[in-house]
Structures are given as structure tokens and as C-alpha cells.
View 1 (cartoon, one colour):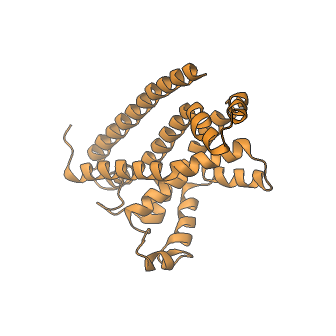
View 2 (view 1 turned 30 degrees about the vertical axis):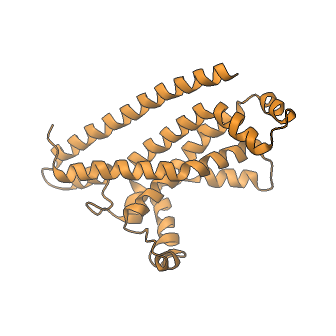
Length: 230
């Protein structure tokens, strides 16, 4: 299967955007999942709804909201531009859109993992003199590792396949914001583009399968380590 330079560009750009989106949202995903699993605070139900809102809203709506907030003439766009950060119609904006769309899946998996931890292990750590931060770092995070890994993979996979929010927020610019999904869309709109769309579809399936298989292997390894720890 021979890929054109434009197709390779779309592939590498998609991987770059998905990796950046996953890594940037990972700390916020862990904190949000832990807060929803362990903390009780006013407005928790509303906060949970806002976190999962991108799952039920049309992706185009999410992209439009991002455009209103972070576009060049948006609420925060002029300020960000003044400090050298431009998101609209840039690959960084595509990473932001992908991170927002993948965030709910990431949080759901991590939250279930935090909720499944035996709290007695954390209490034992505290009774031995460990502070909350040390208990979280040495006990809670390692025990939640399988869920964190699964959540990260789900976020990556969602970011890799994102289309609606991305094309609404940053358009479909070859070499800058044209991901695999956007390139497939462009091929389907052009006469004789079916072959290119098929090639990128196959590549997308292969990448997704590799990510899922890798996550399964890593999750099993993490579960074995957690079992030995317990």
C-alpha cells in the first residue's frame, strides 16, 4: 500500500495531536476522576454533568463553543494571542478539541478505578504516619494504575478519531489541522478520491487496533503488579 506525502502528513499530524491531547489532559483527568470518586462538594452533580457533556452534545456544538471561547475574536482569544498562543486554525487548537472530546471517556475509566480501591489500604497508610499526598502518590495512584492506563488509551483513541469538533474549531488545513479523519472526508468529496480514503481508513483501523492491543497488554501487567502489591 503506497501512501502519498500528503497522506503521511495527515497520519503523523493525527498521532502528534492525539498524543499531545492525551498527555495534556491526563493530569486533569486524574484529578477530576479522584474528585468525583472521593470528594463530596456542593454542585458535584452539576460538575459531573459538565465533565461528561461532550459525550452527549454534537461534536460540532463543542467545536463551536471552543471557537467562541478561544477563537481569534473569542472570549479568551485576543488575550491568548497577546501572549503568543493562537489556537484557532492551528494544530494546537486541534489538540485542544481532541482533548475536550476524549476527556469524559478518560475520566469515566479512572473514576471507576478509584472507586474500586480498598480504602482500608489508604487508612492503613495514614495510620502509619503517611500524609494525604504520600498516601495518594504511593498507595492510591499505583492501585488505580490499570484504570488510568485504560482511560489514557480511550482518550487517545477518541482523539485519534475526532472530526466534528476539530473541523469546526480549526477547519481542514492540509499540513496544519488536516488529521486522518479530515483527510478521509476531503477524499470522499473529491472525484476519484475513494482510493485515498480507503488507504487512510485502513491505516486508522491498524493504529486503533495497535493501541487497543497495547492497552490490553499494559493493563494486564499493571493488574498483576497491583495484585502483588495487595
